[in-house]
Length: 558
Image (tube, rainbow, N blue to C red):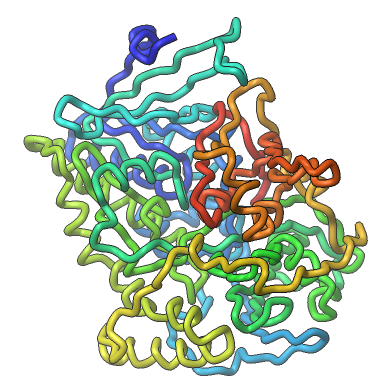
């Protein structure tokens, strides 16, 4: 069926604002829209579209929460029962060697690096709570509605999105349960898809929003949730590490947070600008858990959840222009993570508030197609000021390595804070993209990772099982190759096909080597929607697109 015929079959729904993504940014923006509309005495219709089976199903973060964003939205968030129940009580920073550890918590650092006043929580549960507040204010929330297409008006501006296409078979024909989806049209469409959102990337390219910004940088965060023995549980403990098992030229580190009912959130972030194509972020995380300092917390405990997600690391210089005709980027679709603080949800919430305020003002007037008020508000905001203070830390880590980069970055943060944002280094560039950071396999030796023991370390498939990941099998593969020949003709001989290793869910396999007929097999059913393949493929050949709504992981308490 032609695209025009499908469009003719679709029903259309009109709103003032449509928000793509039901995470902290999208939900906070929806709430603020309703709050401000009530205060102004006007009616504003708002819809939130979420590709996960429920709100929170695709949300994964550490997470130590800075409540400053939430407090702007709900000053009485404690009285309302927001699920931030475990305040940080202890803050440790360790540098790991293969067997030992050096406590570097004593190193001087600016006061904004302290976790005092922050809370350990599940960002998924915070999102679920925000959804309850939003629905109470009249926001329409549609989970299981993947947005597959951006709608444009006759002038080329964004007019809304298509969501809820179901029943397309793997070969493209329409199954008996086919649904052409809905057109959700709006005066303003906010993209709040998180890091490397598929539709966000489309509008960034169409409107050239990153023309004046540096390339975005990413990390891959892999997380497990453990229930530990009472004697190992230290409620409120926040522990971060650098060093082993990564070498000094490979950026990354770990987090370990004690919260709730004897839960420990443990995770490992690998910066995706690593050079060695044999490196496997998943396997680095698994062997990390065998370090004596880490093992003592987990021994005797039970792993109850697993997940992975890419996160923005570009910071201040990588934030694109936020507005375009008919819409805006909010949250991690734009990239507001503060890398040294390892926090971004507070900025995501604040960005949603800024966009909502600009939209309310516009809707009370002539509703200009471009929300310049949001861009202006961001440029003067706490978000921009916070990111500007730490803008050179990531580039310094990339240039100098973990050890020296951490020390020089610490001095740089001190000086920049004391000088009110001025840096003698100016604003350092990130250089090349993460995809272009990979070097040929011939320059490295394969890494022989230890086999998982099934007690502290585990294989990928058992981990994917814990993520409750599922997709409708008879649908088009949502991981698309621009050129199907590149994996075997270029990536395999030159880079030992790194997709086999950078994917934390076993989606990509090279099969047929023994028969001398190699091919790339894509196990799309395993995909946990981390977006790493869309970021790290050295030829930029893999494009992540949305599968049917409701597919993917179903994270509990993550």
